[in-house]
Amino acid sequence: MRLLIVEDEIKTGDYLKQGLTEAGFQVCLARNGLDGHHLAMTELFDVIILDIMLPDVSGWRILESVREAKNDTPVLFLSARDSVDDRVKGLELGADDYLIKPFAFSEVLARVRTLIRRGGVQKVADILTIADLEMDIPKRKIQRAGKRILLSNKEFSLLELLLRREGEVLSRSLIASQVWDMNFESDTNVIDVAIRRLRGKVDDDYSIKLIHTVRGMGYKLEVENAQN
Image 1 (cartoon, rainbow, N blue to C red):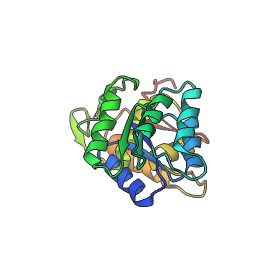
Image 2: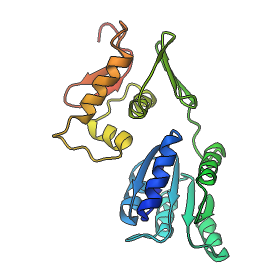
Image 3: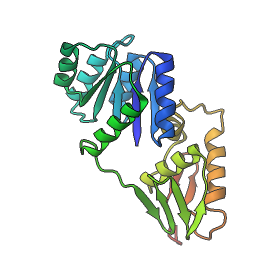
Image 4: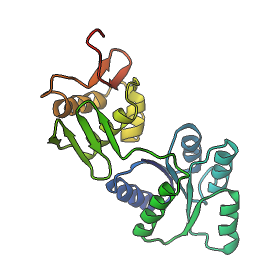
């Protein structure tokens, strides 16, 4: 599950990102309204957590743009603006929930999970499989041919991305943005190193290889036919 947090308060943004990442979400953090607006309009997320008073572009405006684009992604406003008028305005603009700062992280997490369960979010499979590999997302458990595989958080996110996009060639820049929340720099090999480590755990001990390099383009995960 991918979440977008648009929050200009550094400590609050970092706190939310760390907590939600530890809860198993892939989290993108935008620290101003302009970046948040761009991400909300160009990438897919399962839930957007929006502050209202942001530099450049307000949370109100971001939500309006999202809804004008017929994007139904659930939006949770997280704001110090606590008046009834503000809450009503947020909900009437199309927000799905409104939480006032200061907040308890457990309540943010509960509300995010509720928005996901509510069905506004397209149902995403909890268990992903290909060949003899099985990934149980809620239990953070991966096994192949019945043997448990232990992955780091980033390796887990990388494998989940490859599984959810099975058969698609994913560029290094796309992988970097969705797993590392960063812009890919061509002179770094962080993606290649991560893929190599993931292969070592997922593929090396098995005759059927699942992770494939597509020269000059990126990586994909699939069971290739013998004639390919």
